[in-house]
Image (tube, rainbow, N blue to C red; front, side):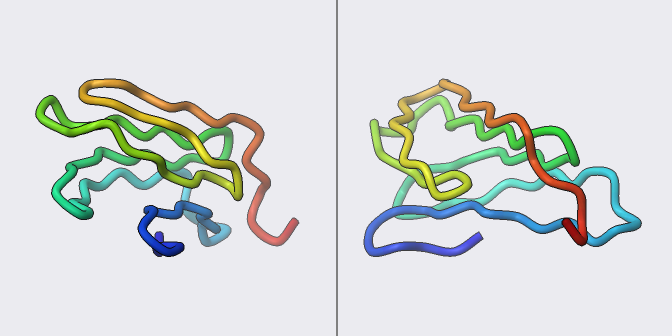
Length: 79
């Protein structure tokens, strides 16, 4: 997790022995719940978030309050 300009950027690489990680993060006044597994990344915006753009696996997505973005097809560690 990083930022590109004014946007949150998520491009994870799980260690080989991890199956999944879930965490919460606040970025520029918005709260996000993020779950990363071998198969997908799910990002859920908090209920009071304003509409914003985030970058997941190098692709920009718009997300508003309570919305979820799911990106499938995450590669295995070492791929």
